[in-house]
Image (tube, rainbow, N blue to C red):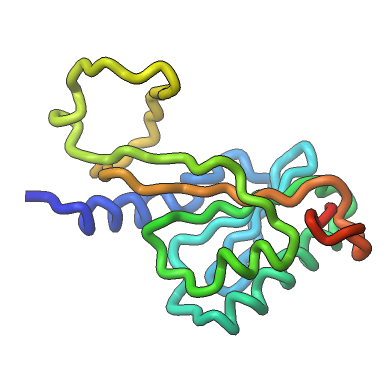
Length: 165
C-alpha cells in the first residue's frame, strides 16, 4: 500500500525539478535553490528540498536570492514557492523580513488515480483543475504557498512592507 510519505517523495522527486519550470529562459542554482527566470520579467524560486539547511543558512539565502534578481533589470516580480511538508526552519520569517508577502495558499491532491476517479459535489468556492504532468505517483494533500515580491527591485523599498523589484 502506498502511504503519504511515498507519495510526497514522488511529488518532490518528479515535479520539483525542471518539470516544474519547463518554460524557463534561465535557471541558476544557489545552494539547494533553483532561481528561475521566465519571460515577462518574472523570477521564480523553488527547490526540491533544502538539503538540511538550518535557520542561519536560510536567513542568508533569502537576501542572496533578492541580490541575484536585483542584478537583472528585466525582473519585475519574484515568486518563492514553499510547500507545507518541507523542513524549512525560519523560511517563513526570513521571507517576511525580506519583503516577501504570502499569496493565498494552494493545495495539491495526490493519490492513486483509481481512487481519485470519482464524481463528488464540490463546494461553490472550490475550483478543481486537471493537471497532466506525467507524475507516476500522484500524492495526498500538501499545502503550497507562493510568496511574492513585486514592483521594482530597488535597494530602497520604502516602508519595508514590500520589497520592490
